[in-house]
Length: 189
Image 1 (spheres, rainbow, N blue to C red):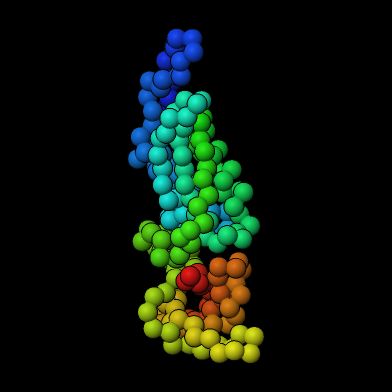
Image 2 (cartoon, one colour):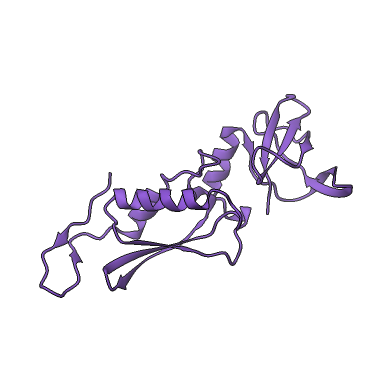
C-alpha cells in the first residue's frame, strides 16, 4: 500500500494541508492495479481509458480530478469501473476524488497500451489488428470485411471469423486453421 497523506493541523477556517500529497506518477501506478471487470488481465491504464489526472483546489481542500473515457458509451461496466477506481485511490489515502466521464473523443482500441496488447495475447485474446482485411463474412445479409487476425496461441495468420459476436460486445469469435483452437478477438474501433 502506498504512503498515506497525513493532514497537518490547521487554523480554524483554513483548508487542510497535506504533509505528503501523492504524485501523479504514484496515482498512475495505483490505477494500474485496477482491472477491467470484463477482461481482468487488463487494467484501466492498459486499456487507455484514464485520460488525465490532476490536483485541483476545491472548497473541501485539494481534490484529485480523474478524467476517463469508457470503451463505449453504453458499457455496462461504467459504474463498476468508477467504483473500483475510486476505491483504489481512497485505499491509498486519496480521500477527495472526483471522477469525470469524458465521452468525446470516443475511446478507440488504438489507446490500448503495448503492454495491454501483450497481456491480451498471453491471456488468449487476439489484440485489435491493424492493416489489411482478408476475411469476409456475412452479417445481417451484408458483406463486411473482417481483419486478418493472428492466433494468440500459435501465431498463425490462417484464421477465420466464426461469429462477429463474441463473449462480450467488444469481441468476435475466431478459429485458427492451423492449431484448430477457437479464440476471442478484441475488435478494433
